[in-house]
Image 1: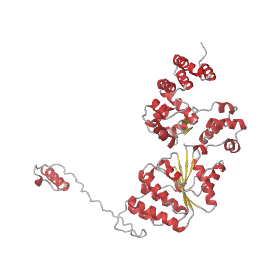
Image 2: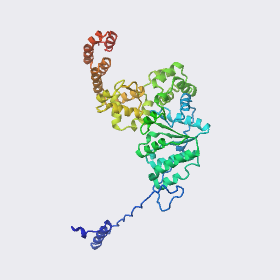
Image 3: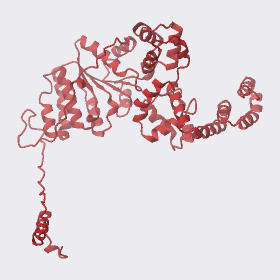
Image 4: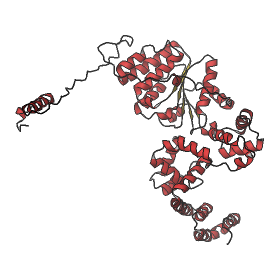
Length: 468
């Protein structure tokens, strides 16, 4: 190519033609040169009526085929436990703009939303249902699916907005949302919009679209969201404005009466009330664990024995957690969960010591926000669900046994430095360091005696294994 810019080909097409001439002169096969076609300029004019799309505008996007089941309530072939106590809460607070039902996998979020939706439908409320898919990380597709869900129960609404989106994609996002809000408001329709499995959405534009809808929600419209995570939802702001109803894992847990209904009345298991109480306590009311336990108990001659040994190591529970929780986590989060499972309770500073993460408190709050079986027990401390804790510890011991010892030593040191002698001794003994356990009691024994804590001292001495 010439060093003089003026002598160079003006375009890539001209340069390609020069190369083809060289090939012809030397008897070489001549390559086909693709010629780029300029992309059409798309201009969206929101003042034009959405009912008269211009043929001069090429389509920007086409949504992929969507299963009709995404716009219908989930159907169960089995009898379900009536969540009457939670339905009562939903009924008392149904004037709230946003209801968020969140919790870890297997806590019955979608089931509760479906029961509430059926009751509203019976009362004449139009209930639009959208089960979110990963496609909804495209804001234009999310809005198309939202419109389709609404039109499934109110065909006269949003008749032209889908066409606008098909033609102009996310350029029309604000126009379509505003028009949808206005149409619902002007129609006077009482409507509840249920968005199921919101945790699948991570796209900022889709999150912003939902926030805009909530900020400008039409009179008569309420939104119910189910999610395994609180991410992407304006819960703090709406709570402050008294526009939020939150139903979390604590509320979703089965109480003893619901467990008895599920296991005995509907499940047909031969369990007495004490057995149900023990199993509810073992599972902490986690519905999925109760279901797995129910399957395991069928046909067993001694169900009480299985209940007594029910832990997170149970094969059915382990398989469920691997498939539905661990396989969805990024490696850094999984490592954090494993490291912080070594103690019975955890706070930010201790989490940093165990995991090496600089801001352990922020990570714990993220775990809590993502509903990964962690709950607060006070302003400082958190605790994992017992079955999840058992599962994490088993996995850690299986895959990294040497790390278990190291983590127990770190935990023992941290608790000792914070004058929590009992837990410091527990972790020293768990690390196999009996000498350190003795040293800890010797150092703190005088303090305990001086402060009339003889019972604590005797308890510490009772932790030591008997001499061989």
